[in-house]
Image (tube, rainbow, N blue to C red; front, side, top):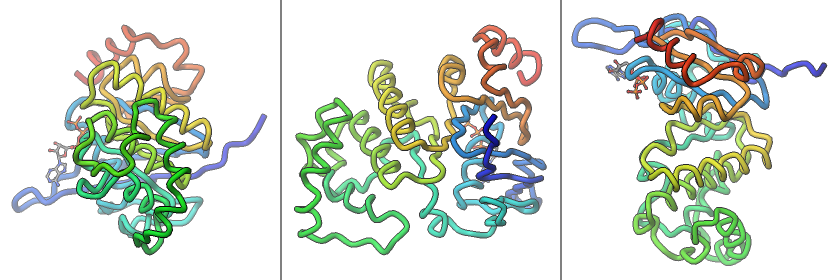
Length: 258
Ligand SMILES: Nc1ncnc2c1ncn2[C@@H]1O[C@H](COP(=O)(O)OP(=O)(O)OP(=O)(O)O)[C@@H](O)[C@H]1O
C-alpha cells in the first residue's frame, strides 16, 4: 500500500468576519487534510462556508485562529500573491479568470509566468504561438482560432475553458474549482468537466471542486466532503463514495443539514 503524502492541512481553523460591531464566525474549528493527488468534491447548502474555505486556502482570508499547513509549514498569514506559486483557482464567473482586454495569447503568456514577475514581450508571444494554438485546440471549442481575440469577446464556455487552461498551465500543487461549470449550459458544462478531468489526469493535480450537483459530486474525484455551518459534516473516501447514491446523499442533506 502506498502511503499518502499530506499536502495541505487545515487545523482547527476559525474564520470570523466583522458583522457590524461583533465578530461572526464563518468557519468554526474546521479540520481538513488534503493528500497529494486527492480530487475532493465539496457539497454544502448556501451559506455553509464553502467559498470561505476556498478563500482561506487561497489566502484571500486569514484565520482568526488555527493553522493552514502546506507540507507541514504554517502558511496561514501568507497572502494570495505569495500562494500563487503553488495554487490556482477557477471561479464560477467567466469574467473572473482572464483579463478581458487582453487577447487569448497574451493571457496565456501571463499564465506561464504564474508566481513570477509578469511581463508581456512580443518576442515571447511569437515564440509560444504554436504551443498556445496546440493547447487551445485540445479544448475542442474552437479557441485555437481566437488567439488574437480579446477574451472579453469570447463565449462564456470558451472563457471558462481558457481560465482552466491558464490555471493548470504551470501544474499548481493545488487547484481550486469554485463551481466553475455553474454558469454554463448543460452541454458546455459537460464538455468543460471532460476537459477538466483531462488536465487533472495529465498533470497529476490535487484538486478541490465545489459543486451544487449531487451527480457531479459523486461522479468525480476520490473523496466527497460535505460542509455544514462552517464545519466538515462528512468526509467520504473512494470506497464509501462507490456505495453512495444521489438519493442517499439527498436524504443525508435533508436529515442532517436541511
Ligand atoms: N466578508 C463577509 N462578511 C460578512 N459575512 C460574510 C462574509 N463572507 C461570507 N460571509 C457569510 O458567511 C456565510 C458563508 O458564506 P460562503 O460564501 O462561504 O458560503 P457558501 O457555502 O460558499 O455559499 P453558496 O453556496 O451560497 O456560495 C454566509 O452566511 C455569508 O453571508
